[in-house]
Length: 235
Length: 178
Image (cartoon, rainbow over all chains, first blue to last red; front, top):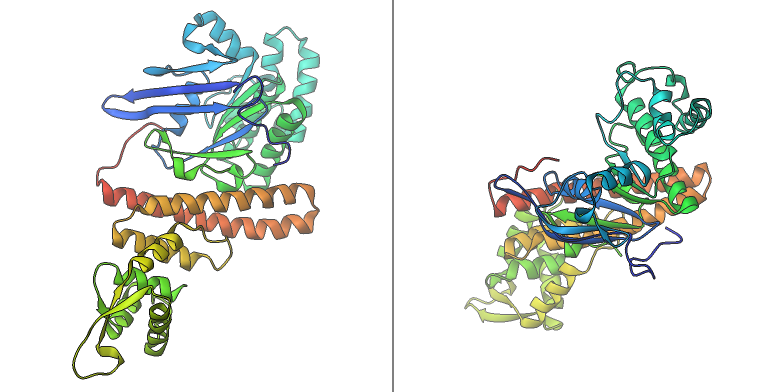
């Protein structure tokens, strides 16, 4: 992609993981993994099921604590941050897209999407207006008044993308953000993530099993057995 | 399909006669079309001329099929180079990639390395196509999609092949929450 950011920028990587290890029982999910993500970069994590790529995403986002190793955001170790600081960071600087379970079931689509803005003090009317504009871009505005249970998986996923984007976070962590979408709707979602990166310098880290989605990224890395596969680094 | 490299791959474990190479080739690679004896001998003559194979023995009775061909160190080096040189991604690249993986597996080389290098080459091409698609019109998008989906099909095979190679290496599959 044009304007590809470089990891070795003046300020160093925005997110940097070093020597991450994570076990689930006897299973090693991350095995001393090191990875840097530059500000404004779109990074795709590819890899077979069980390779550890989703675990890596959760550790980078500070949702999961690694057993050993360090994740730094703007040079500061997440493990050194108090829980309140980490919570604040996740709310104000990070955006998340997961496949399931991140929307509040009792709220409508427009209420879900506008929630981050309202939590940061914006008036409800203005927040919902912006939410509706975003839902329109994602071609799901006709679901604005519906609750999660009244939407298809693909519609709910687009609502989740809108919610991740609305507060213009510094970093978006997305796990299979197009997993429930057909190809054209997948393009719409990737177009919005790409625009956020190019126009606002948003950093995007996404897990995907779809090579066509990974092709939107500035860089793709393959995670295998909890490590970055060195042969599979795409320049 | 590079017949010369396939023959080099088949000669690597031990010397073989031309007729044996033909039958082994058909068994391993001739899924859609078998190779003719003439093609095998012409190719062996070229490999001999280029110093990539040598004749280790000529059995009494004469005739071209009595020669026992062996791979030379230059032949091994040429095979190595061919294996790790990513195939230029194209619609017809699949069968060559398939042969590379089979030869890597047969010879005990790391097949996943071959797969990873090819995946990287494919992803670079897919990135170029995506960039062109975003900058172009609907017709450009259709043309790029056509190639993107074919490349994605290759990549899906690469993923599956990688999983099979992994299973060959360690029969117990890992179980990590996704």
